[in-house]
Image (tube, rainbow, N blue to C red; front, side):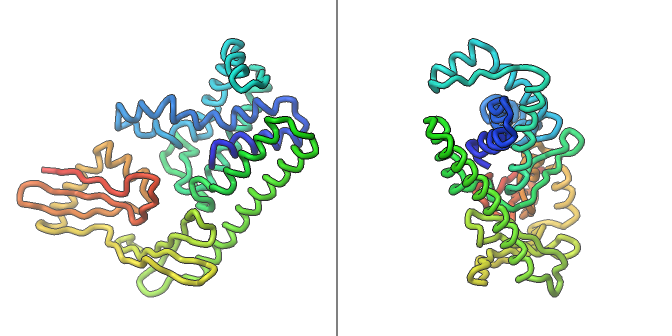
Length: 313
């Protein structure tokens, strides 16, 4: 989800609950996305720490508490709070107490829930597992939702009549929930319209920017072959259909290729790629001396590099 929505949703919920700590919750809601500024450099300098990335370590239940608490502590300091207040020309004073720490964490939990709804999801149970959890309903960012959220924030910022503020917040929540409901319904339609058959035993659907268009993948029981295509639930049409093998080997034996792959899988850049990919596949070619291993994802979402090549002797 986008930055504005992460701020607005906990703010609106706390507003409806008549809490005086709406800003604490809103700041907790955006605190996790400051990982882009403060910790992604760690993963860049030390590739084996790839979890130090956007939607990485901060987007887990445990570290969301740490992140939101630290963020609230920093922004509650008088010098920092005063500086930001002068820039935005609004009083954004917040308190740092046990109560507000809990409210900021509430905002962070809302953030986790919203990102759980989106593509690729987040490692909610890190450090116990790196597995990403996702409902795969929303695309990474929904442009319409982001624009509406920005408009609502502007209405709140410019202190328009309270009736307009309440109406704007209510409309935003209705749109957000409605879009989520429509996307979930259309995802089920996409799955129902494309049942598994033949050698394929599994199917899943992944969102795109269009709520009626879904990236589909079918696989066999061994996950050795993938059938991918894009499906539009309004037109009942599929396009960009292709079949992809999990492993393609040329110039050498499968056993030798697997040995090279086992070595490559220990490389941090490959671990990072596989962590980001939906269904990683490999093209392996041998020239008599070196294995060229090209890892690629069956989906090219544009959100991360779709392939990476390494050489193993």
